[in-house]
Image 1 (cartoon, rainbow over the protein chains, first blue to last red):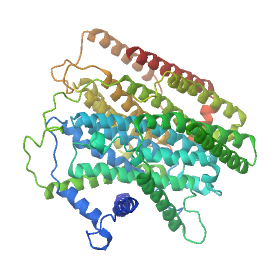
Image 2: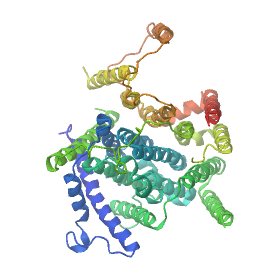
Image 3: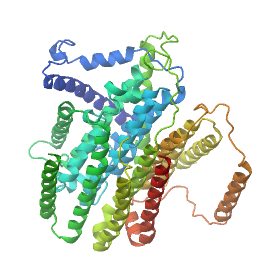
Image 4: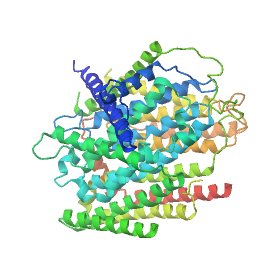
Amino acid sequence: MAIARPFLIALALVIFVLSNIVFFMWAEFKISGRVADRLGPMETGRFHGWAQPLADILKFLNKEDIIPANADKLIFRVAPFVGFIPVVMVLAAIPYTNKIFVRDFDIAVFFVIALSSFTFVSMVMGGWASGNKYSLLGAFRAAGMLLSYELPLGLAIAGVVMLSATLSLIGIVQHQTVWNIVLQPIGFLVFMVAMQAELQRSPFDLAVAESELVAGYSVEYSGMRYAMFQLGEFFGLWALASMAVLLFLGGWHGPYLPGIVWFFIKFYGIFLFLAFSRVSVPRVRPDQLMDLGWKILLPSALVNIVITATLIVLVPHYQLPLAISEFAILIGALYLMRRVLK
Amino acid sequence: MNAAMTNYYYVVAFAIVGGVFGGLLLTVARIMRPNKVNKTKLEAYECGMEPFEGNWTQYSARFYVFALVFLIFDVEIAFLYPWGTVFRDFGVTSLIEMFVFIGVLLLGLVYAWKKGVLKWL
Amino acid sequence: MSGQLLAFWALSFVILSGALYIVTTKNIMHAVFMHLLTMSMIAAIYGLLHADFMAAMQVLIYAGAVTAMVVFALMLTKSQSRPDGAGMAVDNQQRGASFLTAAGFLAVVIYVLVPQKWAVKETAPIVKSDVAAMGAIIFKSYILPFEIISVILLAALIGVIVLARKED
């Protein structure tokens, strides 16, 4: 029994996350519909089209699976797994409360970051193996973009690590008597932007831009293989949104309600933010993308680290000065940017 | 089994479940889906014509420079984490050490920026 | 045979055969992706040694960043041949020199490793993960090598920019 336990837990978690993903899909249909002054799906399952994601999954299962003649068959088949397995492994590191967690890794934060680097490898594999110019171009764009935004993401997380002096996610949450969003507003902002780029979601979806690159690296994929890429992306969303809650929003801390409820309230808050930002911001251009990543986010994250480190070492009660100086710099920088951009 | 070994066991179990789950999805799809391929379906996606050049063409050197700049900063991040867990024990010394490290790499970033490497094509 | 030892031999087998595949295959992209697998398995070996942080670092740097770099570097080459390398030779006219280099390296490795007395144990010692301990060692005892790393990285960065500019 003890031998089978991890497998059962993993399976239960995968199914749990999957059922949430079905809800995500429906919620995104509805939100993007309403924002564009449409109703969204209304027919499937009668009540507000609740069964639409299920119908989509059924469609994926029924789609013919085509592997192009000049594709590299082996790599083509392996690529979706390279994207999917690491994001399932990440689930082992994410705690939901201090009682409900799989394992408490000492290096949980670093574990998640390291495994997320498989994402772009899977895209390059899929894009190259397809034997198509569009897909290779899309894969290269995706890889260049993921590379550029992994750095600010990692640096923003480093600021949190410095505050709590541990890499364990449970330890980081337990350390947050004050939520890190108050102490690390710059880090939080960088994290939220970089996270959307890492997830390839709409302001930053130019790697799969349907209108230019006809779906990028996944153009030759169809049916379930394509769905596995999508599934991997949703699992990545799950992981990164959980990370945002745990690192910056105090995890399961909150008054009155039990911890698990607080966790999911915050989690769905992040999800709503992602869903709305997807439909309200236009897609960025590649040059803007690079400028934002390398010339704004990366230096901001470095400044954040320098301020945090200096105040922690030099000031005994650093929390209040840290919060004040971070907010002051943030507001100042945003004001300056507005002036310059006008 | 000690705690650390149990951790690895869990990680491996999650990897296996991920692989098996993916395989299961593909198998179900294989049973359900039609399979009537023909030559035209297997062509690479283009505007209806046979693609006249493979996808193995030369790309700009910029991508390579990107990857190298990324690699270098990735190494820096990897060092930042252990530093972040201990730096307050050593006080100002570790602060200066890290600032020298970041400063040197920042020099590289500024150089790359000035040379216009960070621009998209 | 303990489970750890079994895992070690299995991983070693995958790593060595993967490495062999990398040098013998004609399809250069297959070599890259096999490199990815080999590096991930080496990370698993670090895991067996209870060096969690090193394992994660191995995945982050080698499986992620280096693979991306190699793919981009390959895409720089102007290839007249097909990507699967059909009709290409695995070696070239430098095979004699490279054989000598490899043999010399092997000799050095044997010279260093064989007389070494190893503290062999059946199972790895139970240690708490030691990111903090590792950080303490790096930033206390090995601070000079650490700073030299940054200068080397800077040199590599400048070098590649100079080379890339020349090609433009």
